[in-house]
Image (cartoon, rainbow, N blue to C red; front, top):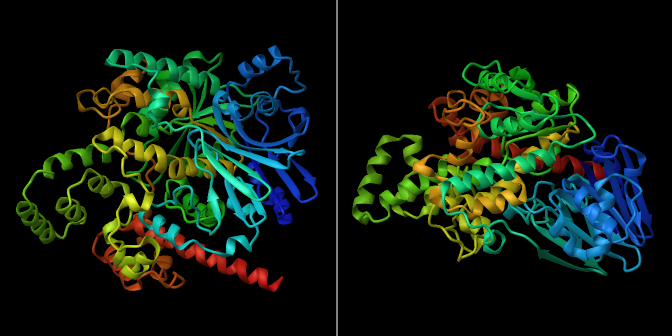
Length: 620
């Protein structure tokens, strides 16, 4: 795991060796040739010797690489049989020589998480690739004859980061994240998951090489009964975990006591030569601590377990540099406890941790899938007059949750009910926040939906829970969940691995019919039944909670001062009256607007950081 950057015609990219130090504190390397520069910051995981140093060279090729290729030993053997020799035990050298051997087709052989660039010193061409699901980040900039890329936005010069992308900020207000290929800045983009980029002599082309929702990727799997699904998923997940437990540094597992992390820990422990180290987080705030569940699971599995308990002040301290590490507005405040868990686990001596990310998206664990399908079936065929009468009653309740249901009941599509849970500011309310003229400026209309926000294709299937999970798989997972995991872990130089998101397992999950993913209507039934083979149901059979953060309480106490001054510094396109209404309702009417208020606070911080940078540039 590392930090990478590179550019042509942008000398300032060399600053990446300082600003990405947290991603790779062990060493750094720089390649420079005329107007081309490649930068690498190393967090040594495999082959800790200098033989794994980057940028690495072979023939006319130079590589800077971030990530892990878990099956590199198999690919290495194949290359040895073709006559290649190796001077290290690193996966970097395998990537480089695989590209020399097979060209772009080498991507089909890689099982792992990665973002890398290979520069051809003869043709002066760049080949930049990102892993299939988007576990590792990759941003790029292209304007006129300048091309640059990096693991984080902060690698780009202040002049590039001076032009904000207002449409992306609208997307953020709805989603709590900015979806690929966009970023918060003009001409700066995220390379989409499962894609590669070719750049040569001012011309840039992006090609999609894999999509988990593409029928062609999962058609080879024929899974028509539940028992077969159980067997295939467990076999593939065990294989993925066994591969991802391999490293030349200490490896552990994050254990919340929920289904996904418990299953990862159970299967890791099953084949481990020594007891696996597991780590759980706990809060001293009453009602937020679930570390007891993790302790019970760990005790049954006989792992070497530690509960790492945090004070509220520990979480609040993380807010101070939250925006620095994300570089653009980011809405998931669950990254705060995850950051502390990563920090404390690193202090305990591990450099790699396995987490359960991906289980809810692949095996239908989220409540909003069932919620949307249930209410869509209930209201889709009801007469308009009856729906209108029902929503009038909802208005009279003045109940927060009831009010959110008015628009989707009057417009009963599956996607509208999905948005009740899956969005912060509802798309149908966005005009109250920014005004209709502002929406028309950026979307060409003022009546927008999540289809417009995400640019969902017109032929995208939307019939059941699995179809909704494909939205999360393609957008929410890489741009929210995995971004959170990457920044929370890499700020403390910890590599976080996600076995559930093994590409083969994704393909298998997409091949399993919807009714088998929800046996007897039970969410995540496949994972629960596999886990029950290793852990008694009594230890994990309870409602899902996730990483709870008392942000609503903080806005009424520790963060109240910031909340009361929220309007000071917000951009002019935000309706200040609407913001004041949210603040008053949250403070005095027992309404919980914490997600929306947090997101608005992130936009304010984004603008204040930008203005500070502009002043510094002007002064210098």
